[in-house]
Image 1: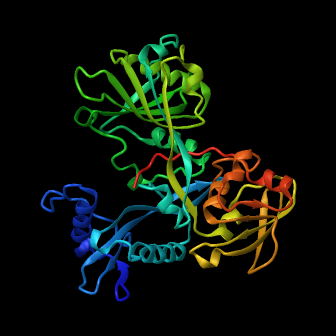
Image 2: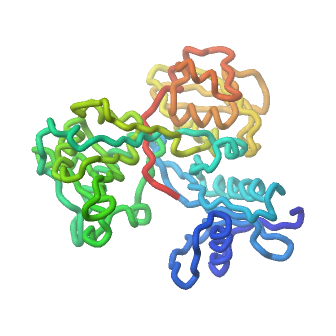
Image 3: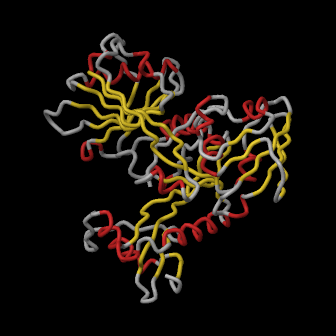
Length: 396
């Protein structure tokens, strides 16, 4: 492995990476039928002495929202190594190069969907987004008045209101992807009669677009479930009325909501609770790539203050050190030193967890985050590291 080369994959080499994915993940890959392509500069690999790909991954370029700012994010996917090349450090070397390239592009965060949380903590990631999957009998919506104020987005329809609802919802939640044309591709069907996927935009009585729902009649004709893939609301009225709209699918016995943020208050609208099936998981892991930049962009209280953080043990060496932050009027300025004492000590997994707002430092369970130590100034730190709204509805 010492003579291996880490570099971006060229367009002509994409088939080789996909063949490796087919072997490693068990996904059938037929070059004659597969027309998908990686975007230039997003696929990386470790090439052995023979020139053959031994390990690789993709680092998809996104923007996400973080405390009201749109910042660069790398969406890691397709992390794979041929069995004969495993446990030789190939993936670590690819990660090192991908992190270096991400910082050169100005990215602030990196996100992935793990096969093992334990494995990816070695690279600084921590579980951050808690999503809820909820299944209810359709008659749990029976007390909500039926609503007819939603329209189907289909061929030739103006998508302006659809984009407006998503953008307003996303901008208020950390991790939410700032979607452009590329990110919307495949999420909304222009021909729902072909795909079974239907997207509706809800308007309130004033004619304002305030919610969206993407649903699928799972299983086709005669099936019993309605699958709801995306369900976003801008106020509680929209949430209630969109549930009333779903009553028009009441030939279905059950409703399956597949990706609700865990804070969604949807259960307050159900007439019964005894047959709710609810499952939560840490749906994604994330890590901060540029600690200094993230500290500058974080949302701070209007009343001023000062705190310091010591970051240790990161594989991105430039992140390690002591950061002193002074803030006032919701803005901050940070200075970094290589050594010194600090109010709080944290590794990148714990710091990422707190920065993104998965939970508040004031929550007693925060003391269970590995490597997190509060030495002093707890009152100020608890004003800074609070629980925040989050959403992630994009996969990579």
